[in-house]
Image 1: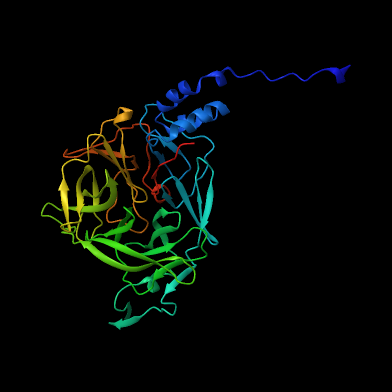
Image 2: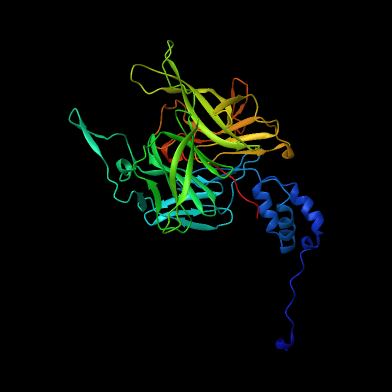
Length: 408
């Protein structure tokens, strides 16, 4: 009878018989996040082998994310697009998280693990002091910020956006929020209903921000390194800026047109490497077509100088190398230093993106496409190491970014 028939058992996968120690060895030889994730999906035994190895392995290599939802592993000749990660339209990036500002809050999602959480909307900001108002004065019949631009002068702009987001700790999130060249520091904790801001602090041309050895640091285009002191609101326990102090006074230079109608523009980055806080200064050579014209980048003529923060003497000290085993991945939204010798990759390079900030273009391009560039410290030229990865230089694609995934 049919009822007496026993259901067939599913054949056992031979892959699950692979000893855990051998499986761990195989997993440890996979530098790409995509390969590690695929390994862990084969069967529970392989997933267990992967978990046992995660704590002893270096972090997987980063992923290049493009705003159209494409993800690439960049160090291999075969172009790899991560399947099933259709997260197009993000507006910022933080480590392994894509950021989607919405009317009801900032939605963060990890495209690899599919984890997500919410941060407050930019329209929900707690002012310090609570009764702060924008102050204006009249100059030549025009209304100008008095005595300088503060959060109260920019907070209602339709162009307001997050230019940098840091998940500093489980209880602290910091963001640079602003318009164009002007931004301010906002803070909150995950799950909070609002950000906090010092409403009367002067907005600055912040270039970058980093959380280093338990403290928050920022740098503006004057190359001064600032430390942000943080306190807690007595009633809610939410983090808030209590004071911003200067730690290092920079010796900046500013763009100027030379006799041959060229000029140098710059971008600044903060990144930690081997326990040291570094400032990377990128210089971009441009030509100026005429008086008052927007400078045009001269393709390939870019360079970097790297400085370490000497906190004892309050100065920047130029370095000639970042380490034979180090790569610096630099981007407006996310930067990191990584050891790569175990992957057989050359070190002492900087990998960077043409990821310009919204409404913050100091120059324009005369080329249609771009890619990530590689610069060897001390050299005089830029390499574009992956001929198969490129994207158009347009507003829709300016948010190209590095993603730093975690192992499964």
